[in-house]
Length: 159
Length: 201
Image (tube, rainbow over all chains, first blue to last red; front, side, top):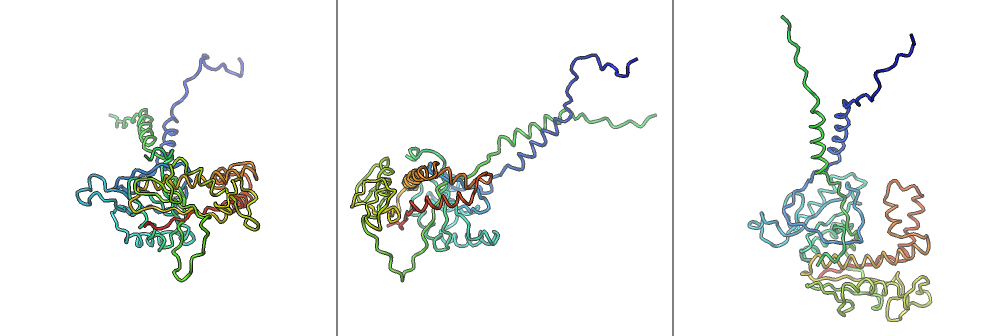
């Protein structure tokens, strides 16, 4: 009579899959948390130009976005085909930028307020006149840091 | 006469449901970080202050026309040659005496820029210029600066300037950030990015 009982009849025991749901849920939650749903629905065509000398724009809390481009097809009847500015969810004119920037500044922490970067997401077919107007307005507001948001790629594709 | 126990819900399919959700989120997730060309706009000029006089040879004027053609100092140029031309201009180092540039490797043409610290690239565009042409030109000019800065960084620190900047932005960089910052500042001083964006005509 040995103290050590022989275990089982050999063979590998089945691996318990009871913890599988837990593992999967863990992954699920991870992806749910990191997923960012787009917060602005675009009402304009926004195909960015290509550039390869780019820097990353990863300090999200410092960035405010200004979109510009032709109204997308759905809105063309109402707003025409001339390129326009979009701030948050609305079409806007150049004069609205002032209000927008002040508002954005107000919602940021105080020490970040003068470090804000304006990301210009401009459709590649837009005329520079509109972009210059935006830049001029930003200069007046002393929001001098801008980022011309582009897609990473060779400039040849801009043709 | 027994109270029947509530039958246990089979949790075997839980994993399947969770997988389904997981795959959905996997597919929809785009961990996107925007990237682009960073620029600093010039502050609005004070009208009472006379703008400083700049010698013509120190200005590299680039005009982007409506159709995307570029004029450099009023001569037409192909976009493919722009980077090279900008590098030649910045790296010229034609100055003498106090204006001299020891690290420049250019032709030292007296008709081109004196010193990278004096050299200014002026970028102009018309109101009807397409944004994509403008970005293309911006990109080439930034590339010219980056190339020269890389060269100097290789000479002084044996690494690329662009890598140094990348390391500096990386929060997990193991090395000495203060030292890196100083080195970046040094390179930036050798080739300061003087890219003026005039208002369109």
